[in-house]
Image (cartoon, rainbow, N blue to C red; front, side, top):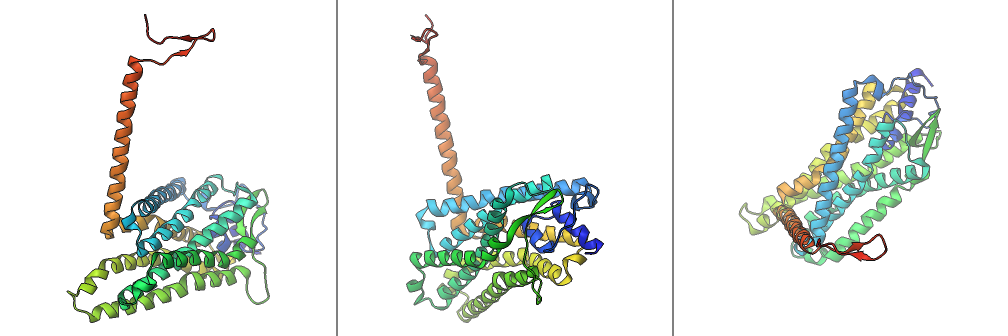
Length: 373
């Protein structure tokens, strides 16, 4: 292993990348010992850059968890929000929520500069993160197919666009994602590079292709390329269909807003995830041995963008969907009323207690009155 590869291994062992990023950046035979003097992302960049990175990840995590929790709440709370499209959005928000739940583990890795959570948690983190990533991609494909059925087959669509079928499709998407990510669960482990532990995926080597390169191609093809091609196909058909009807057509007006919402969510998804996958493929083709500090940094920024996608979706719903906007406002109004009501009850109780204090236990075991005589 040359000096560049050794440096990359050491950087990975010191927590340069998240556990998910390490699977792309760390060669399977990474075994170089870590030393205090080695150059990593944390030592080769100004301290404010590292701290700013942690702040950005923390902000993305906070905004994303709050936003997706709100989406999940309003869909469950208000019956008018339980449409077929919103069921897909609900599951997408659930996948985004679970994807972001793993972000604190990455932030902790940046803080401690090693993986402190053990081997079992490493497997759980790697597997759930990958499953949620794949599920998001599949759900966006399903939402595109749903738009195609609703717009291009309006007469027969009610037969297929039912809550039961939507739930079944979502369950299938989760199941398929879990099955596709079985290899991650099998090979995710904690690597002890010297005195520093890192959570990564140690792929078996073969004479044909590097294990990491093979899985990167597998993930890119099934988790991004094929879904993207299907999404483009469905939306080309939808646009052609809508272009054939008049601009003032009732059918066109009925589907325009929902179609635009789904298309915007998909476009943002592609913008946020394309750099990540480009980085994965570049490193796989180039080889981890040739990856420089700049490559690692750019890859980490692309990963931040992929996490940001999960945080920005609720904002898109709020701006592009009147129903979500009204439901969000209603949820906040209900919370404010409940808080005010609770505060009023609290003041009344406090006033009552001041007039009629409760008896307290006396030192001798009896009770003493709280009203002074």
